Amino acid sequence: DDNVFLYAPTFRDDDKESVSIYDINFKQIKLILERKFGGHWKILLKLHPNISDLEKRLINQNNSLIAASNYEDIQELILRSKFVMTDYSSLMFDAMMADKNVLLYTPDLATYQSNRGFYFKMEDLPFPLFKTEQDLQLGIEYFDYNSYFSSTRKFINDLGIHEDGHAAERTAKYILKKMYE
Image (cartoon, rainbow, N blue to C red):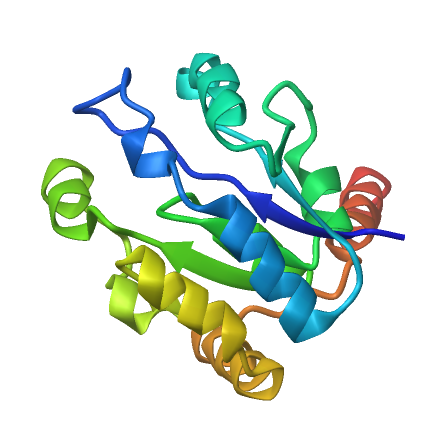
């Protein structure tokens, strides 16, 4: 019966030992979620495999978190979540296609961009983008599902994405047709 907020950040090339970039006041996030959306909320922490060894330190510092880094299938975690928060991970698109509310928390945007680069301008993505913890908290508190949904639908349409859940079926039929022609 609990609502799930999934936090799944990616790794940084420059600092794989520090937890500071991932250390957010999750207790406050949980309170805001409960006040805004009602019900009980669980916050899952799913770290990228390159930094999963940092999970225990983050859990020890934040008793509002539940360890999920060893959970093998991120898709199952996404499907179970109402909100998915990441930074630069492409799982934002998986969550969007699963009709989940995606938030981007990017306090090190300029540094990360100069180190790794992006396929899209972060500001062009349909997801609310927060550079400070205070803005993140306010963004959750004033989250507008209708505006979010409209933005993600426009993004999907502009890219020409036409997912309907039957691509594998069509591919199999095509292959069988070609095999027996």
